[in-house]
Image (cartoon, rainbow, N blue to C red; front, side, top):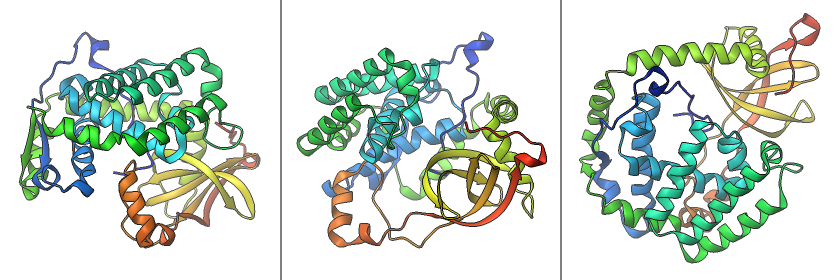
Amino acid sequence: MFGSFQSSKRPADSAFGQPAVQVVARILVPESALRASQPEQQRLFQAVSDFADAMHDIGLYEPAEIPANSVRAQAINRYMAEVMNGGHHQYIHNCLASTNESSEIVWQSIADGLSAIGADAHLEIFLQMRGWVGANPLESQAQTGFEGGRAEDLDELDRRFHELEQSESLVSKCTAWLALLPELRDVPDDELAPLLQTIIDANPKRQRRLIGERIQRIECMLQDRFQLAMGMAATACQPINAVIAVGGGSSMEVDGNQETAFHILTNEGKRFGVLNANGASLFEMIEYDNPEMPAAGDPEGMLAAMQDGRLSQWRAPEVGERLASELRAQGHEASQA
């Protein structure tokens, strides 16, 4: 999985008069995750989240078709990881800026999950964030986590969240809850992948959904000026690149200037995409041979990485050589999304 990208949305079966019902009864995790020692307790939390990711992203199951508790763990894991990384501003920007049906499902999954594990203080913070988004729809769309896109009310929620994590680890609460779920099944590590593939292949609706997803992706690219511009720049590369997914952006130095560079996944590999007044450009992504780092949202693991020096050795990807540009002067309109 390419971690910087969000999974694509697809039409719900209920839109065609076919409401989804649970068809996957068990949550499968590797034995090593269930038996992990205290310092590695986040492995079970991550394993359950990975299971839900595989069922949704690869198996193309709807949330209602897999165990509800796996969906709740997945949603909590992402919420925690985003907040620990860039605050509630980043979470809203990446996940909940729109108030569509899928966002409502995610919101409810997080609230139900936090309630189930007894994380009342975390739940209070989350509900206040949810209330803020509902009361400030325009300002919520402007949240980025960077300067100019950080609401003070959300800064206060960040402060409370981080303070709470010092005394009530969300990872610890989730792990204790997950370990007791009756639907949880641990399997030998080397047997997990083929068992997951069997479940994925058993989805009778997967092929139809896959076709619908591809059609929707093409429609989205044609309607979204940013994606269209990136697609045009990709076709100007040698060899031609095909855009598979567009991820989040961050401020980076590009040709001596500060630009917002977006993660772009193509059939030729990972790239950076930049869109400005001159047009769209695709750049090489320079990645470094970094030491192994803890999973996102693992404060204990991050502390260990700081103490043993791994964090100081880690280098973020950088913008490399310009691969191609699609300029406005060539007659293709490209507007900042």
